[in-house]
Image (tube, rainbow, N blue to C red; front, side):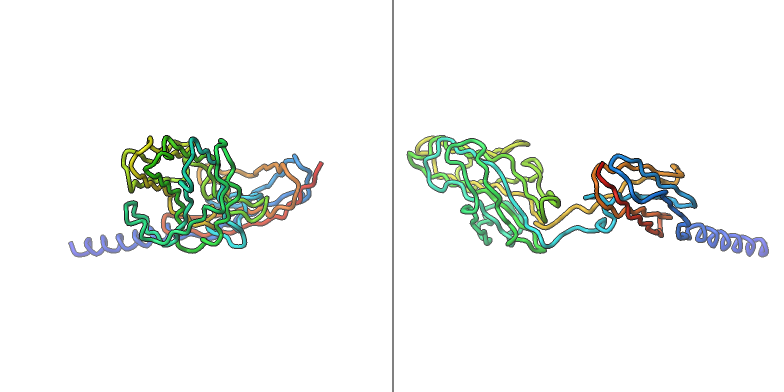
Length: 298
């Protein structure tokens, strides 16, 4: 019985060694070639593959698809720009809509929000005086860029007097972009629906901000309606945050190919990259193959 027991132990050890060996990952032995490196817009560029890799991801080198930026989550050297349009109807009150920014607000949407430091930047915006879709202009939020999130709020204050009746503010076409130059613009908030607005009523619960996918709106009460204070706040934002560049998965374990075709639609010089990876659930090893491809205008 004892020899049998010892044999079972040895088999178990060999099994464990074998399993661990199976999990070892080797560096991909994978080669890529291209017949030429100069092309005309619209040409088909053919990349030929030899060797073995579990996965291959393609980065064309075009904006948004550059391998060097695949892990980038923020930028410096640009400006964070807020834009929206506004429409004031039946507006007789002065300064009833305010635009505010805070970087120390903790995100709790209740009456304590007023205890934090809010910077009034209303004077940086062009607000409607009765014209629909009045452009705000480009409102530079760069002074509020930091590692802490920024909160942007619209605050409505309605007074109980004859000037309040049915005053309505409508905000549309809101966006926030981090802009390096005209060719490098990174969306942070792309629309009203993407802004994650949360409203907070501080006075007169009968009148509140309303929101749809395309607009937010504050409708004041009739004459002699009680004083009204309502906030609506965009989700916390890192104002220089950008989306990492993405590649295209062109090959996997079950989808082996021996070549890949790509067509560039604009002239330029592109740093094309292929990230070739071998992987298990516990480990992965990658190599990157680079090609500088020049695409000339027709």
